[in-house]
Amino acid sequence: MHPPVVMGILNVTPDSFSDGGQYADLPDAISRAELMTAEGASIIDVGGESTRPGAERISVQMELTRVIPVIEELVARGMYVSIDTMRAEVARAAVTAGAKMINDVSGGLADPDMLTTVAELGVPVILMHWRGPSKTMQEDISYDNVVIDVCAELQQQVDKALAAGVAKNNIVVDPGIGFGKTFEHNWELLHQLEALQALGFPVLVGVSRKRFLGALLAQADGTLRPERHRDSASAVIAAQILRWGAWGVRVHSVRETLDSYIALNAIDPHVVQDRIELMGVRDFGYHGVLAHEKEQGQYFSIDATLGLSIAHAAQTDNLADTVNYAEVADAIRARITGDSLDLIEKLAELVAQDCLAFPQVVSAHIRVHKPDAPISGDFADVVVSRYKHRS
Ligand code: PMM
Image (cartoon, rainbow, N blue to C red; front, side, top):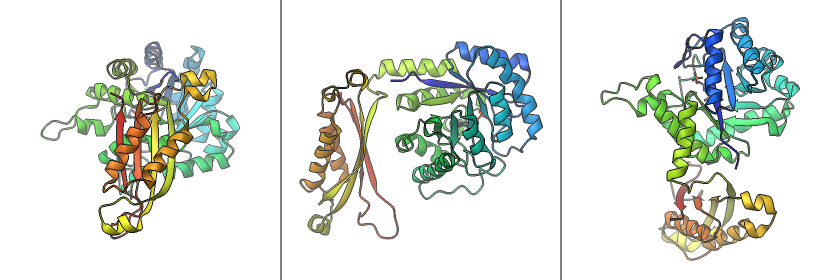
């Protein structure tokens, strides 16, 4: 279990949506970074260009003037700094000034030189899902299925990075909450974070003070909760994201986030960070309400995310100390090919019960796919998911 990575936001901009202008002066920026470090931030993310919806681009020179002196001061104080930029030139100057990580909200798409620069610099990079510049990103938002589409588009961004020579273990992915997404899209992505985790890279998520939380906490007349009063909700959601196994979160309120993480773990210790994920166990079965489904059958595919601690097995290297995923796969296949059920909800429930019968498994998140379900018209898949944890 890795300690949670909390990245503290330091926007040295006059116009970021929630903290613009507050840390534009060097002494203010340094004391803010020192406070966040003292509160437990492991990375300070310095940004010199606002990415709020509708923002205009600034010049490279302006961005450099804002971020480089701050980075030099923070690095001199021993902090681990990342640079939040979409520009290769700024990324290079920041790394030369001592930054150790690049956070590109465009995932390498805004600047054609970014990915080769990252590869050459040999530093970790956060590739965020991005569909276009801040000025226009909230116009014409459309996805067939936001989770599937974001994962596929991020995979393309990752492939480009790998092709440019970025090392696989230097890549972190980010769903880009609030970037080219409606409020509902943001929630869907958070609720199905495991789909993003299944890409096989560490996941970082930034929800802090974003507009969809303003909407969540809006007054009865629809007035959004102001940014400065979104910190409690931001902290709880970030903490839960960490509990779901994300590698890190990007936040304004470091202490509230870590306190929420500790508090949630105390009140609900069942959510473990370690997981075994078994994806796409596929077989032929006869489940369905319609007679022809019971007679002719069809393929079903099941993903199982098992929550358990692998800490002991990680030390002993002994299969007996963990769950044998081959046995789990056999149990899943037996359910798919076994007695015909009407509903895939029931199939998901039975598979979840089977998984929890393995003594080490604390929680089971089961997703049953029925891609050939009797639905007219074009559709990609039907998925029913069931989450159960040991009581
Ligand atoms: N959000 C913002 C800026 N940079 N970087 C990453 N990796 N992920 C984010 O979600 C993200 C980001 C916008 O928020 P801010 O204005 O509070 O910095």
